[in-house]
Length: 149
Image 1 (cartoon, rainbow, N blue to C red):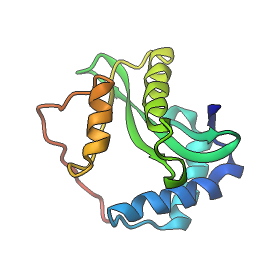
Image 2: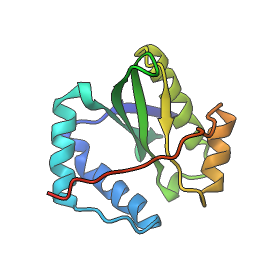
Image 3: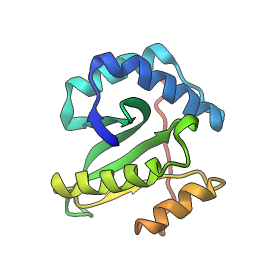
Image 4: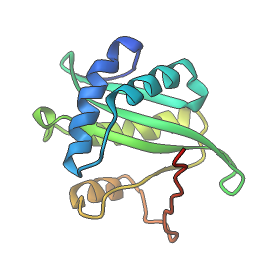
């Protein structure tokens, strides 16, 4: 049985381990202490979004992070599916599919107008999964500005 549970501060070490493994796939840097503090803040301010731990047969198997935004263009509150990760020990069991479906149901329950995400272009498996759940490429490019303070 698979469950999706809002994380608590007690789950942060587990999520940090998963996140470190996830970021290593594409060589993304991670500062564990800053990330730990960010999770504490994120948990304390649910208006920022929600993080869910994916549990399979009672064992931590991955996580989902949804961030909330307000968009006039898209008619109100929307969500960014910031991260969906399934640990390699649990891959191939359909947990990614369940995670996407859970995220969509959560968005419907919270009356979120849009659920958007980014995916690495080389991750064809994820791209195909998202397409099966009616995600479509957007005609705009994602651009980023970083405050280097």
